[in-house]
Length: 431
Image (cartoon, rainbow, N blue to C red; front, side, top):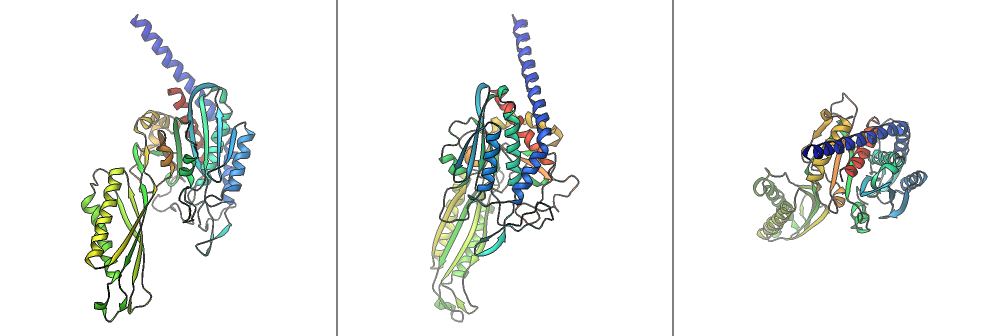
């Protein structure tokens, strides 16, 4: 009996591996056949960038393509988002794949035949619009994945939801407090999903490599605004004032003790940065008010609550000691991007298979933020980084994200299509 059970188990495993390899081969063949189309889509989207919640042209391109390959389409989700649904040939889980579509108010300097020359008025200034974070590659990759998986839908043991998300970078409108992934979740996009996968191109990671991390991978981001109110006076008579500039300086210095003295940085890093300070008009007038803007980065709820509490304590007591008044505003923008440990463990072998174990890198926590985190709050999720830097370049010298010289090697697109496709079919087969 033991031999029979062992033989049956071995046959089952062999059948699973064989079926998995067959699907991988089909993905590789399909990806190779559509690679030029993926590159063309990317260049078209790059040349016609659109800011958050304005991605109408990009959304129309995506919707048209999805319909042409037989995928059910829903448009105008969370303003300009597009969601495609592919029903597989066999019962199984629903896997969501996400790509963000929006560009940034950055003027491109790259000398490319598909360079963006589009402009807009932002903060009362004329500026260019550029895909300076690689969202054009994300859209093109996911369009490619949709075509690959649609071509093998009868063999899929589950369904796929393709999420083309607007406004990951925000909508640049202080009157709107819900956008992008958060709004998509609020509109029910994740209601029938079992797992979600996403990727981000990285201009400082070599082509052919993939980075991942289990647990907290990217930080939560909170916006901080402090308004210190004192009493205006002549600069020659400071004793007549309640000086908000001196008070603001003391607050800034004291805030740095939160990280150095209150946060256990052996568990997770954290950041409190004041990036803007405004107050006063003349050299000999002590102003009535100073405004400071900052950012907070954390990796867990307890750490976030600790830092918020200490900010309130330090700022309010420092102002009180100076006889000043202060208004404290902390707005939670994105939660931490936390890769589900169990899901990540299961899918590491898939990453090793698709790129080669020697090309898979376990990365440190990243202090940047991603609203993919909202999807991960609903279901287990895994967010990976795809190398986009030309081989042989120095990552410390190439242009970073959100800069005018940001550049991606299009050789990376093929691995992106294969990676998301492999993750989808392997997750389904594991279930």
